[in-house]
Image (tube, rainbow, N blue to C red; front, side, top):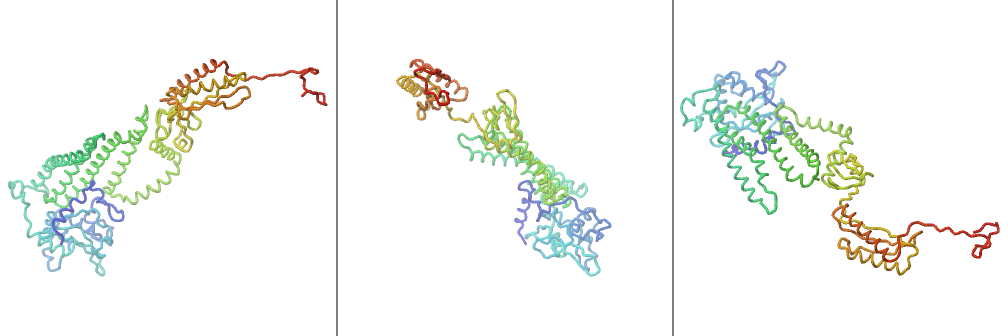
Length: 548
């Protein structure tokens, strides 16, 4: 037999992380709701519904709850010699179950006539839970009785009943009940004593207050240990989880207290089902509050913020995270309604494939939006050229990127096209390229050309906004109508309008240098030479009589 402390610790197992994950059955079969009523329908093989372990155990509980101990005894494996005492045995067994029965998997009991085959027990044996005894605990075991000419049925084993009868002899009122006024102990409302009902409700505010103090202390310690200079305060993160965590802790402790109050098993089953739903709602509440904190302290740091991005892109991501939280909680809640989550997920997987093929372009835009928001090749307010469109990025959503062009029109480009196309972000330049070609007139002498080159170099070297390491001025080529001087430099400016102002100033200074050197800027010209026959400088005549 296992120790009493071991079994008590198991009372907390279903509760960690909202009691949800503990209710998932082996192989994905999840709990279904209410037990089958007794007696069974006409198409049932056994009139008492003992075809399955689930039907046997819940059939006994339902019959005992109604006070039909003769019917309840039909679910017990009682020797023939004790058949005259079967109703008394059934009543005693019910009392032991109400005060000492512990189980975390009643809803997962097998509904198959063969029972559970993956529990490591013999094929005709199923385990239901444990009964706490004075020296430890023992298992509540169901056995499958088979006989020729008789339908196989499941019964609560005699070994379990025999040990339970020994425990019954040591049962008494709980210690707290022995100290209460007699009218609280003797007065009943249905199967529940008045003191049990009062304790059930009075424990809620008491446990909530204690849990509030406990959770507050733990969170204060966490804030103290995680405090770092320059980091965002941890108070908002911990305060967002305080109220939900307090409720979770209070309800989990209350669940354990309900067991020690000796409330009947059937009422504990109803309570656990209700508590399961409440805990899921609190879990959802906690997730939504965490999403809000993540939105305030994380998303706004990694995503572009602008005039509309804060209200659209962040809003879409926040709603997406909230949707994921709701879907997660719904999946965890399906067992309460008897839905097979494995089959549901398989159906959703097939439907998701069909939807993915049908909405391929839409999904491409959504994934492109996530890529833009996370990788940030552009941000709201940047000047970009995307797919031949030049303009300022006005908004980035999960579907499209919107540009405000120079003509003041708004162009929406699907995010799929943005990510597969070429993005030229003009606002991300660390410096601006200043590269004019100054064409001087062919009348410029070498001396004047040298003066122009020297003064333009001095101009660039003296300007603090010009990058000295890369600046150069060279007489580059003899053009068709000009002597070309190539000016190459990088300008440090905060933005493009600032660069334009610097470029204007430098070009004006270059014009002054050219004028002061005694030359001028060339413009495209053509010189036409006319010759007449017999002129001294006329070209020789060709044999065909045409001049060259």
